[in-house]
Picture 1 (cartoon, rainbow, N blue to C red):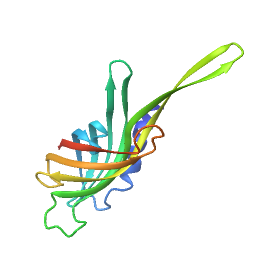
Picture 2 (cartoon, rainbow, N blue to C red; picture 1 turned 30 degrees about the vertical axis):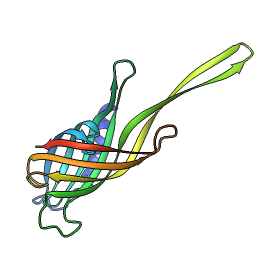
Picture 3 (tube, rainbow, N blue to C red; picture 1 turned 90 degrees about the horizontal axis):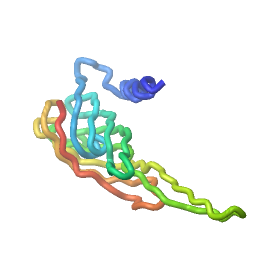
Picture 4 (cartoon, one colour; picture 1 turned 60 degrees about the vertical axis):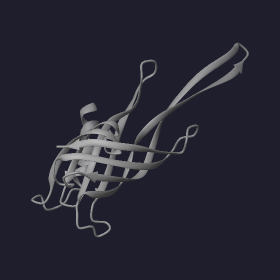
Amino acid sequence: MKKLALLLPLISLNCFAEENSQDTDYSIGLGLGAMYSGIGTNFSFVSENDLKYISAGCVEYSTISGSTCGFGAGWIKTNLFGANSNKHGFGVYISLVGQESYSSYTTTTEGVEYYNHESDIYGAGVSYTYFMNGINKSGTTFGVSVHATNAEFEHSFGGFFQVGYQF
């Protein structure tokens, strides 16, 4: 069952891939930022002017409370504003961006009961990515992104700086 849960995002992302398989390539990336769901990796469908990806990574780690890891997905295009180069990409993404926790208590006839609550924070945002060698070639990426979140107790906006390498 876990294998199916891991394969479903790959299968569904394939629906968004370009229909002409000669113009579409695949890429794997490692890094930190929105394209990598924090510190992690991505699997991408790449053409001359766009990159569609799913990512898996960790956005938090603590020796006390453990790690917050999850998945994301995004789409980056380099020809939105009529640029002659395919190095400047603007994109959209959704991803796990953190975790929030809070405590509550109730008073009963037997005493006070304490509860700890934890919930994942998801974000949807926009990004800018610079591809050193172009979006469809292996190379280093740099970027920045901002997102809105579903957080109830934390900040409802956030962002990532990005650095990585697409193979």
